[in-house]
Amino acid sequence: MPSSPAEAQLDIADLVVGVLGGTGDQGRGLARRFGLAGSEVLIGSRSADRARSIARDLPVATGMDNTECAARADLVIVAVPWDSHAALLSEVGGELAGKIIVDCVVPMGFDKRGAHALDVPEGSACLQAQQICPMSRVVGAFHHVSAALLLDPSVPRVETDVMVVGDDRAATDAVIELVGTIPGMRGIYAGRLRNSRQVEALTANLISINRRYRVHAGLRVTDVPGIPAH
Amino acid sequence: MPSSPAEAQLDIADLVVGVLGGTGDQGRGLARRFGLAGSEVLIGSRSADRARSIARDLPVATGMDNTECAARADLVIVAVPWDSHAALLSEVGGELAGKIIVDCVVPMGFDKRGAHALDVPEGSACLQAQQICPMSRVVGAFHHVSAALLLDPSVPRVETDVMVVGDDRAATDAVIELVGTIPGMRGIYAGRLRNSRQVEALTANLISINRRYRVHAGLRVTDVPGIPAH
Picture (cartoon, one colour):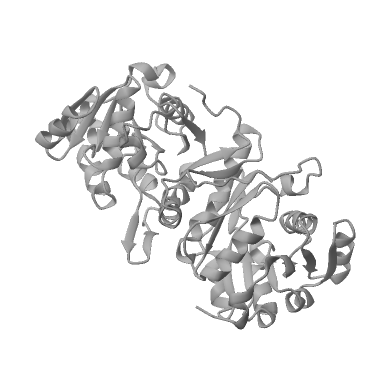
């Protein structure tokens, strides 16, 4: 596992959070919630103009291109569409050595029968990220969080658990703490990167649940104490 | 999809539930809960003697060999270890034409770093079952339910949702209803068989959660109304 001088002294409140692909619904929603929770948030996009335009409508966020976002952030959330995942990480990976990459990308296709998980040669989006960025600390999280709820100003608390997967204990601990800054959300350690594929792919099942029950489904893990009251 | 005359008239209360591989923890636990809930339960095992011995310790269950269990049951739960899955279904599949097969088998390996999902040539255990038994109605369910909780007499309610996957609407509806006969449990339709792999594999993540937090984790799906109070 890569180790950096920052590893022992991660202070979540002071982390600058960059959202790569921050102009899509999931990225925008997470940027919004982290801004509201008090983090400094940078929105990255292929187009700096588009990023700046999106950032203007969000609390406490600044827009820029993905490379500048990667360079300036302490931790990045990767929220691009799956078909841009490898290209984005190859492009900005040089800026991410030693940093935590929070990958929330889901390799998924859609047809008339709904969503379905796609096979990934590296095993999963997270494993692909770790292969492209071997000096970064890859953590999977936020796959199951509804963008609609993240973006809905009438939803003060996002009542859901977030499965956090990764091989670097300090990095997963930091992401669990970061998740917990959003009211209602709780981060749960859910295994190593070799078990990331099914966490990503389960998003297709949540989409099936949403279609059947006309809801914005999320998950709570039972028996783990400490569902947040704040 | 296979269709049978029984499709329109499944009466859950009258179904005879067979548990193939019913002497393992998961099978025994499900047999126990369905017996307590009022179903007639048949326990199947390679050894009829062993099945009878296990059944004696359970409420309302009868033991027999797997083939007789498959022949006499209206619906079977497959709860054998993964390495017996294909062989069992090939052996007893002839008795299962037109019947619902509820598959709760998880293709999973263990090493010193814990549990990990295994690749399956057919895509998943459920898809393998449907390939071996094309005239049966395969439904995936109960993967995430803790055998320890199912078997614990001090646990009156098993507070968890059960993700139910399958391509046959009447069959998934019947299994959802059957799940709901166990106090605390709720069945949730969670997609088609092509999305069964990640539901099975997520069991490895729940085992990681159990190890980290020293719990018997289960899942609740948020936003879907109707968590059972009975």
